[in-house]
Image (cartoon, rainbow, N blue to C red; front, top):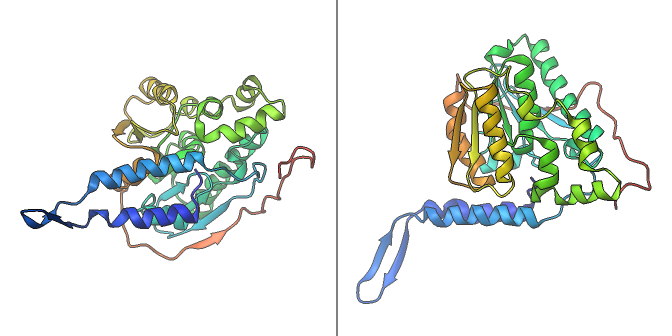
Length: 305
């Protein structure tokens, strides 16, 4: 998901809508109205459409990601949406909890070269596992929150470690999302130009899809889905629900009447329910993987300008 300064301006317009309004009614004078919550919901739906219509950066080969270190007392790890920095996620309300670490996704998490997507996901998970080892944190105590594209590394991490998972705006398979979601149309077009078809993508990504990594997650996990999410095709949402029933039947599923952005905003309430502790926000420290991953580029002839 790509969020620009223009989108932030839209949010500033949307957020105050909960305030009461005053309307002049002929013959009755001035009347105070209830908060226009439905208008705010409509604006968030419009924001979804604006995000879908916007282009995405041509860079889908960079593997470098950013990790923001928070409080050493927290047991929460965030994996953010694609092209969404932490300050935007905080402003929208996607990340209400104090965290141990928060990961901003590398551009290659959604790539026209599937091998890069695999490397990006595995690198994120490996870094998070090493972080827990270095800090002496038991994975069983961890709550990992994945938002949108961030649900892919979050689910793999939870399945490998047994952590509690909160997956927000998730889907069942990365390959089919790339081929079916309107949010990935430009990357899909790049795949076609480079001769990468669905069969190759599926083969490379085999074993890394959320639907294939549910058996090991904690029973107290939760999936939060938007019933009107235009980013997630209905088939991918239904596929995820089937996988949950089969592999993680004790997990809780919450379906909200909302789109992509609204679902992530509304997930804050459920994140707080899952969190074992709540503390005031602490300072953040930004760090890169150690050793930092170098920028990995495709041959010059394949890169888009």
